Image (cartoon, rainbow, N blue to C red; front, side, top):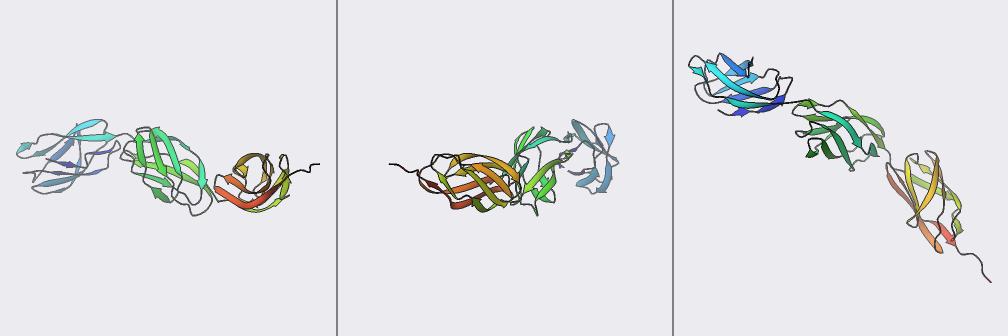
Length: 247
């Protein structure tokens, strides 16, 4: 006598189908000591709405001919999402986020606002998920849906990709130490600035301006790359290192 599905939330309300023989005229279907609501009944199947419960409960069917053997139904506790990281990423998505919590082993869907993704279950307390693209920059609610229900929301921020427009000045000494103003868009979440692959110290002034101090380099033009929570932007050959005079 199969039962499908064989698990559901502790709050009940799951539509469950039990198949077998001699099931016509069923008078009751019990989940443990609780009675389910019968919604349809044929000689070979019964569909019910399960009552609230917890743990593993025996399910049996009672007809005029007696009571059936028992099958197991597993009540799944509601999931809890505690944290996610990183808490922001590009509006285009495709980055991976880790969600930590409890009761996550039956997770089927992670929602980022109105967009959904299928997670990879690492353990009952940990999921990884590739973030779907967002419709625009800004914060959205993130929820996890499992067999036991849906979590309370966490917050995730979509960040537009940065752009670089200009540098001032565009050249400086190979010994480094040149203060360079970088102009562009989406710079407020900058995490790194590099000149020719070498990391520079920097300070963000606002979403369109930051100031970086060049590291030492070798003579010639180098790419300048700014990395933010929304991705990276490059000014190819944007800065030129100049050798000092010698006699």
